[in-house]
Amino acid sequence: MTAYAEKREPLFHLSRRTNLPWWRAWLMRAGAIVAALLFCALLCVLVTGTSPLQIGSAVFDASFKSPRKTWVMLHSTSILLCISLAVTPAFRMRFWNVGGEGQALMGCLASAACMILLRGKMSSGMVILCSLLASILMGGLWGMIPAFFKARWSTNETLFTLMMNYIATQLVAFFCVVWESPKGSGQIGIINQRAPFEGVGWLPEVWPPFLQNLMPGGQKYLLNILIVAALCVAMFFYLNYSKHGFELSVVGESERTAHYLGIKVGRVIIRTMLFSGALCGLTGFLLTAGNDHTLTTTLIDGRGFTAVMVSWLAKFNPLWMILTSFLLVFLDRGAGEISTQFGLNESFSDILTGVILFFIIGSEFLIRYRISLRHRHKGGEDLG
Image (cartoon, rainbow, N blue to C red; front, side, top):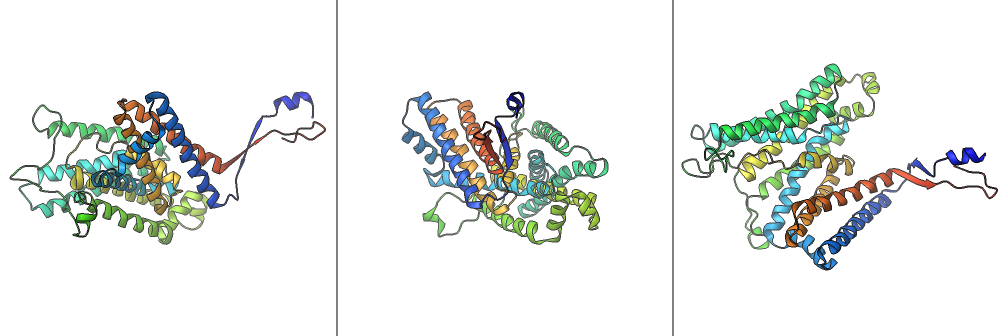
């Protein structure tokens, strides 16, 4: 090989891994998380001058210092998991739905509307039922609109679903002004907090007696967690053992193959996104009727976008999403606790979260691809 050709040869070569054992993949992921935590600890030591043990203690305390913090962490995990489960059928179909944020927000809006407009006209149980149906229908509609345009005119679903997020945010902002309480505040506060409508439309609290002493303080969180747990199991069987799950997987692999098998691709796209949006709407219902009892433009808090990463890291497997959701929530809460405990601003916690995500995504790249250096024969010939 000539010297000129040798100079043009790249120093690094990427090759796709094809036979990496699953245990090595998870070992690499675990190593990336440990490396991320060590890097964040070093960064915190340089900024705050505290010991790594204090920083590790702060990360742990953020989620497990008290029963209430543990319940809040589990509830946050369940909400993130719910949105992740919702967007996964679309991802299995290779429909890149990044509109989970807006679809869940429209579920919140529909639920809040029922709680405000139907109070005093129906019993609390009927308001809950109407809120549930309205949230599912509104979320499903918000997901079906970009699916219809994709099936009909092959529009770009990523841009379409992303723009729908902004429309949903502005709609919620408008109704927050319409329903504001007190007037002039720009927010609606806690819905149905006071008599004569106290608690109308709120999901009931579920609290087994044996948990009273074991893990107190979870009355307002447990029902949501149980619903999402049941949904996770149902989604696993839906994706892997149902006819619809098979069809959307085939469409994701190859639309040509789907046509050959007699699968109506357009119908599958619309049906799957209707289902995906409906589950996002259910998430909005669980937030508004089940826990927060209010409506704001930041109620979803970016979890619609984080859900994309949760689903992707878990390889679209609902059971693995439990672990990835828990991990991201735990690390995010730990980063926030570090900023609070050591007197740093919120931007520092965002930096730590970004560093952690960077390491995790980097590990996925290394799992998929092998990086090799340029090497040569003993005689000097480049092997590439």
